[in-house]
Image 1 (cartoon, rainbow, N blue to C red):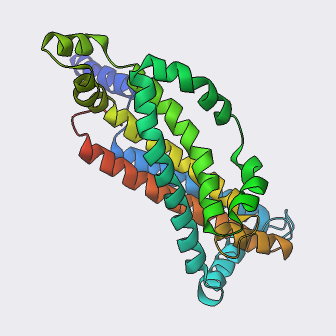
Image 2: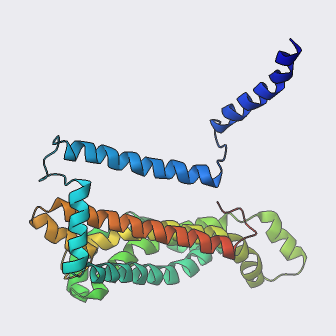
Image 3: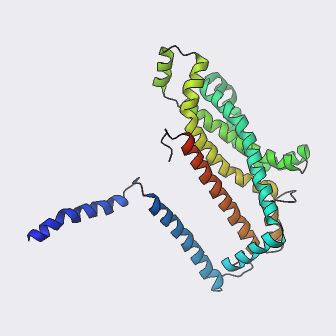
Length: 279
């Protein structure tokens, strides 16, 4: 009887730990996170292989993982796919950096000064709902079919989103910090430089990380029309040839590059803003 009673606290503690793992917002350790994430990809490819290799889906509509890998190898060895990847990455980064250079200062001004916000917010909100793809015919007329047209598609798709998100972040600054800075003799410009911008910097960095992911969707749209290189161009050519293996491989490459860039962005943000509570 005493032996059973001695085991009760241990059993109760273990049950509590197990129940907490399923509790809302309960964090998981890094190893478990990686294992769960990898398990989903393994399950995804297993289901894909089952339906394609098992003959349940026609290869015309969906290539198998093996066919996709073979087509990917051909893209790299015979069709210069590395050049396509390089062009797409250049377009994404170029358009995104241009958008950030314009949008971040504009968003800070809108968030800090309510007069600027009242003047610009209606127009920026209006433009935010306009799809970047709708501008492609005009951009072709204005900038031709060269690189500038593709950069401008990404710029238009990103700049208004970043502007509004940064304005909201800066506008939500803690009022007690602002009042404390005024009490210590800070000027209005000093409030912006020494209170609002440093306080908003970690969230602005996270906003840029999120919008970079959106920029990848815009570049593929830009490359579907009038492009002679890039991942989107390769996908369009493969669609004309009904080569679903190459189409899927191009999509997976985009996802992998996006995942790598997102991870690098997170690492840089954590290093730059180690004092904040970034995830």
